[in-house]
Length: 120
Image 1 (cartoon, one colour):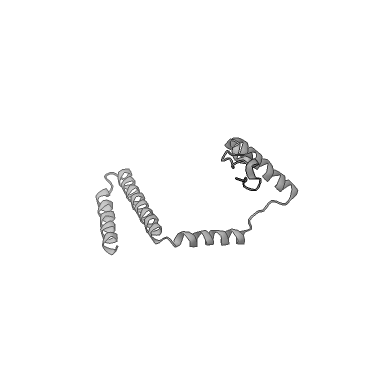
Image 2 (cartoon, one colour; image 1 turned 45 degrees about the vertical axis):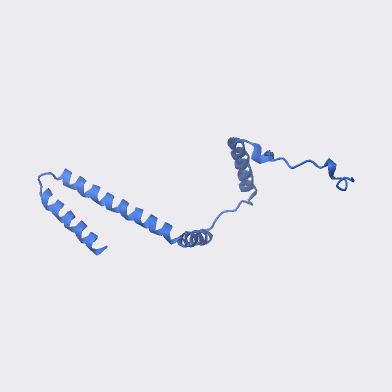
């Protein structure tokens, strides 16, 4: 039977990394750094102005905001973090003013926390 129209000399593609991809990370970083420095010296490097940076941030924020479950998760984490920071600050203040009306401060912070919990 005839060959596949002269394709017997074609080698199968290799999956081995070549060029930049085959280099270790430190070498890649070094070369990329030199390229960036050269672009800045030449004056052709891209630099964000404030308006362009604002648009890029807005675009990223819109992309993240589409995932409502993710937004709920990060909002919950932020609330937890804020509450724990407030508690730590209240405890520190109560500890530093030991004997100077600390029970009054503790009752005030407890009532604030209970009213916050009731409103959420």
